[in-house]
Image (cartoon, rainbow, N blue to C red):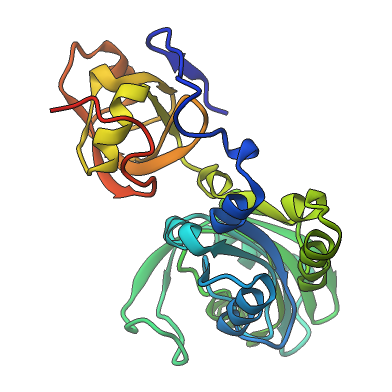
Length: 319
């Protein structure tokens, strides 16, 4: 858990911007994300289309595609929040997988092999994949065996983005000398999105109708979260009001514009650039660690990569 380093006492002008939780409902929707529980059957793009029609919005995009039969966490971004979904493509993922071994193998041997398939592993993407089939290295952070029942092995796997669990099961089967395949898969986490607070398509539809028909936006606010939730896995840099509009115009962030930052930032890390009100301005790449930034006298310390806030949200205070 990161600790926050306050670099200077700062206040924010209430006349500009808006805390994410206080946005009016129309803005909340257009800058919102949904932690959707994808059902088995439809493609991720089909789910996007259904939600777009359901909420009567222009755009819906997902973070991290799931195959049609795979269920679980499918983060969705609405309208202005669709671009934020790109930040989840490199976020760690977690799955619960049912692997079927093709013949009886001693349980101790299964546990031994799965223990070996942690840390850095080599993978070649499967034939049915959208990427070039080159040998790649992926990190398996953790594998927890939940149950072994005959030839069925239920396990939870936390892995680097871009890991193919179907191929992982195949490779484990090869190492066992028995063969294996992925029988079922459910995604349980994508970055900050977990099974806690999952929303079904029916939940979302009902919440929208409660708002349209009864004027009750309570449930819709529970189903749709501010887009800032989607960067919860990134370390934060909080900036002064005076620096916001410059960042909105693509400027890099100078040490003097920072009010505080998380202490777990390393050089090269992607960081979320936030206002004092908790709004997402953009993301950038740290030129130095948090401690080095705190000790710096001045200079540019964050290279701005993407901007999500509209210019003019805060007044221009730069030349």
